Length: 337
Image (cartoon, rainbow, N blue to C red; front, side, top):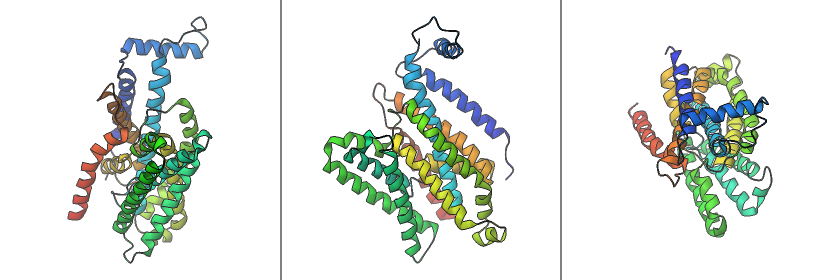
């Protein structure tokens, strides 16, 4: 399929429009002139031209709304990238970190961290989430290797089974420590309500390293779609490429879950649609998936905080409402093929 060069520009235009709309629209709407004034104040303040103004005219924008917008962009791009990597490795459009249990595994680590009181430390949630996500990955691959049918369907069913098992363990933890119930439920449903600039500063370098390595692996992953034997004959170390892609995807997903909980279906829907639009060359798929994922999660989060205002929906519930019908469609399509 020939790549449509206009698609990235269209997505970028939608992304910019979405950022402006998300910044202006909410429980308390900000008129566009006031939004422009706040941005002008920030620029002039950074340049030293607003020394006489001691009060920020728009604290709502800078302290609450903008961190959430930026985090939704980073998380959406990261989840879509990881989903595209998983779909490329397993050569199946119904594979992503959430469906295979990695997000649930990271949520289990976060739940354990809350109960143990480790959340007061800097890495107190992230490290347990990373550890349990990697253990889930090892368990997933180990169980699927023991099966007589080492197929993608076996891997997917194993991931769904692990999801059920981990959900049961998290439920038991909630019963054991009812005082942490709200926090644990937050991680299982996914939300961007509590993010701050400090979370963004923490996520940015992790995302830069992991995304950079995954993009460098894109060419080898594209060659591997021809088959492992063919890829090895072309000089690709398939085992090292697969392990690196899975590990760095798991690290990125774990950090995201430690901040925002488990957000489903962004990594499933976005890469599949992107692949239909731009073809199977992974570098183009990965980059366009990141742009589209950022826009989709920004849109989902804006709906989550406005559709039931003044209450707020978990963003994971909004993405699931869209993702489940599309997942059923993919299952039916694959069955016909």
